[in-house]
Amino acid sequence: MKSILIKDTTREERERIVLESLSCGGGGCENCSACGVYGAGDPLDMYRPYIDGEMEIADITRRFNAKYLNG
Image (cartoon, rainbow, N blue to C red; front, side, top):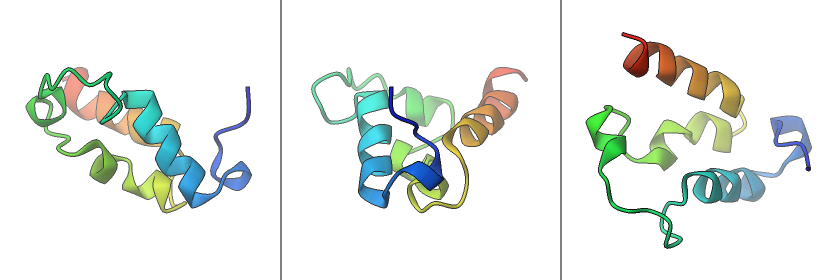
């Protein structure tokens, strides 16, 4: 498996990683509205710092989990 770290990817690759991981717009999305229910909104907005090369995807996910899933 190829690294998904910012230093090892291009912006285009990071956007594709986010979309494919969440199955957004690729037929895998069941339009469950979970992004909105959990307050994240559009996944591209939530993961924008990763896509823009500012914050690792694991850190964003960890922050989201701490805020919305763990209380």
